[in-house]
Structures are given as structure tokens and as C-alpha cells.
Image 1 (cartoon, protein in one colour):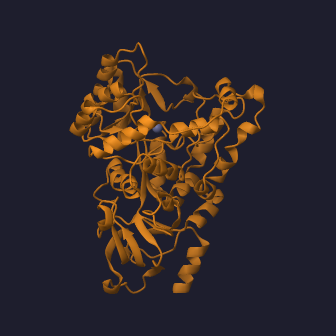
Image 2 (cartoon, rainbow, N blue to C red):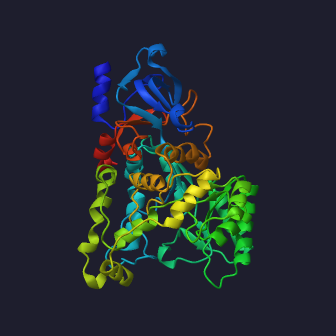
Image 3 (cartoon, protein in one colour):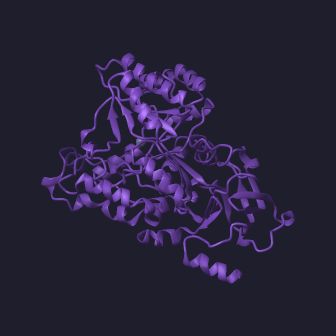
Length: 469
Ligand SMILES: [Zn+2]
């Protein structure tokens, strides 16, 4: 029987297993990201998973392995909670054709075809996330079909948990993204905002999201009133308010208006005491998304190169398209892209964003790891390892970066009681690694097995099964 189960494990992405059967990870190093320094590391532990919950974690010598359990040798393995990407967009693929409002490649690939592809490809995109050890994602805004996407993820075993926002309630229009179910909808008054919130609440969103775009000359106070009306309507229904606000003055306005979740860094100047006080008052979550702007710059200057993790774990269809700029005739290139290609140079993370992450972290504001995956150059799945690397570059330890991606990610999901840490009673969302993630945060990409909701997956098998999805 045991050999048969192992054979099944090798043949399919999911290990066939009766619901009452257990998984035992025997003698591994367990990492508890909610703890500090050495207390976070427990060596030679056995983890027992029964059904979809963690049943026990204890010293190998004293932890009983249930009869019939599927045994995984934990020697030279590290066990961490399943990662959470707190900022993704499934309606976008990460390739060049996915944001015609930024770079219009309709002459090469019609945007309608791109979005249809992304929708049809959801089962594969779900698997790519799991293969990267990401067992939960927050899709923080997209078309109304985002809610169908969430249903689809819940129906499928081979998918991360998904929390979702509907269309972005926006200060500006994005007509090039409107195929009949636009991801971004402009409102001009508090009444329009409340009406749109009401439409979205019918689908039970996990967040209401505002795209708070302030341009010189705009009336910031009038915009803040719209955000407040949006937030009040969301809060009245028990739904949290997520806001895109990337300048200090705008982020403060968002916080005054009741933001629960800031989905990007403050990028224009250092955060100040007033910002920190407002953030504390709101108990806000802060998601730095350090890589996404770099992703655009690499991709649109044709200098995007895959990382080792992306070569193994990204959707091969998307990887194959990342070098398309070299093949597109010059006359079909959008002007800004031709310019970016001509001027391509060194691309560095924003020093202000790095510094703000450290300031916000030191102030005790919970920071969630999020990639903004789906934007041009930021690929679903392995982009998390780029983001984690930048968080460490900003000054976080690998343990702190892991905490952002687990403990604090669970807060973004609204599931802190059930996921984000490893303890008996928690949902069994677990990653087994081949290398120590506290020695190098990139070792989080060295995924041996992933358990999501008690189901065991092998990354290689998930990747091999993509085209059959
Ligand atoms: Zn986003």
C-alpha cells in the first residue's frame, strides 16, 4: 500500500489519500515565523497532519506517527507555513500585453485575446502559485469576474486560497481596459462611490478597493470625501477598505478616510510621525510591493531576465513571451517602449520605498508581503522571491520577511486564526523546503513539497501538469 501511494505521488500532482489518513513529516526543522530569533527554530520535529488540519508538532522521539500515515522524511528539510501573496491580479498575466493603458500592444496581441487567455488559464495560474509554496493570495482588484475566479479556486483542490476585491473604485478612467466588465471604474461623487460599493457587496467581496490617484490640480479633500464614503459603506457591511495611495499626502488622506490596508509603499517621501500615528490608529496593514515598478522597467526596456526560481516555477507560456520585444517590428512598438529600449540602463529599487519599509516595520505596523503579480514583468508565483529579496535588502531579516509572508499575510486574508503559523489546530497549509530559508531568504524557492488544506503537492508534478489544466 505504501509503495502504491508513493507511486501515485510521483504520477500525479496530488497524492491520493483518504480523508482520515494522515501525513507525517518526520524529523524536520520547523520554523515559527511569529517568534523571535533562535526561538523561531525547532530542530528534529515531527509534524502530523490529519484531514485538513495540523494535528501535532513535537520532538521526533516523542511524537507518535499514526498507523497508515504517509511518511515524509524531514531530514535536511525545513518546514514553514504556506506563503501568502497579499497583492495579486488574476486578470493580468505579467506579459507585455496585459496593460494596454500603460503600453499599448493591441497591434501585436489584442487586449481582448490577452484577457480571454488569462481567464482560460486560471487553473494553470493557480498551480503555479502552489508550486512556489504560496497557499493563499489576495486578488486586490479586477473585473466582476474576479468573483467567479474565487469560486473556481474554491472548487479546485490545486489552487491557493483566494481573497478578492472586485473592480477598483477609481478617481480616473482606464478606457483601454474596458472590455465590458472593466477592472477599474471611475466615480466622481460619494453617491456614485456608495452605489458601486453596493453593487460589489452583492458578491461578498473580501475587500473594497479604491484606486486613489491624485494628480496636481485635483481637489484632495473632495477625493478624500469619496474614499471616506466608500470606506464607510464597506465598513457598514463588515468589509475592509484597501487603498492604492502612493504619495505621503494621499496615503494620509486614505488613512483619515478609514483605510484598513495600504496596498503599496509610500514612494515619494519618507513617512512621518503623522502617517505612523494614523496607521497605528487604523491598525493598517502595509504592503510594500517593492518589485512591481522595476518589473515594468525591465520588461518595457527588454532587459527583463528570469531568475532561477522563475525558470523553474513560472508559467512557461508567460516566460516564453517575456522576450517578445526583440521580435516585434519597431513600427509596432509604443513610443514609450521604443524610448525605454533606447535608454535602457541600471534599474534599482527606490531608496525611499526601502527606507519606508524599515521605518514602518520598526514602528510595529504589520507589513504583508505582496508582489502586485500580473503587472508587466511581475510573474504569478515566483515573483514572491524577488519581493522577499528586496524586503531583506531594505533591512528585514529573512525571518522577518518570512513573517510578512505568513503571519501578516494571514491578516491580509482575514484568516489569522487559521493560517500563517504552524500549530496544532491550524489549517494544514505547509511548505517543506530543501534548504534553510533563514540562511538565505531565496531558499524559500527550494520547495520540496507543498501541503494546502491537507492536500500534498509536488512542485515538479504541478509544473508538468500545467498544459493539461
Ligand atoms: Zn495592484
